[in-house]
Image (tube, rainbow, N blue to C red; front, side):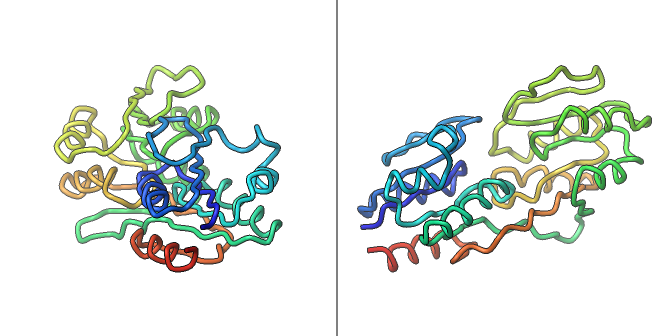
Length: 248
């Protein structure tokens, strides 16, 4: 049986780690652990690989035979490091990332690539909901100082590491989110635009459903461009079955 390093931090990763472990593989499940540390039956490593001298060194030390990247679609640095380290050692790197959300009838979505583009697109809105994860202090201050901003709601799973301006309301929240709760949040704060990553999946989709019903525009951050993995999957069951077929 293969020794697998499964790079996780998502619900999909936890499910796949448990399934492969129960099938007899030696799975080491890795995650940053910034939000929460899940209970898994397999071996667990928390906090990244700098503590071990880097990812490539860790792969050597643990005699890893395959890297399975099941990180968040926006975990660009980790996905890049996985491909490079696996190539360096001559072992395969496979990737599963859940499919992106697709625009539906009634959706008012606008893509943006980076913080500079986001600032330009927010120039006409007054009460945004920021739900695209962490943001630098400099970018947040630029948003607040756009001039027309009346209030800004920032929702993340991890607390900011800097003091927030008075116009900013920070909300700690971890999905899954319910439609009625999302609708109430948008109504209470009179949100006129939502900023989101195109994360895919069901856990955080309710805000988009609420935005569609309330006719609120969404600024959607484009997914990062990643180096190609040896095999790539967008269906979790397909990924699991391919692992079982190839590595038994």
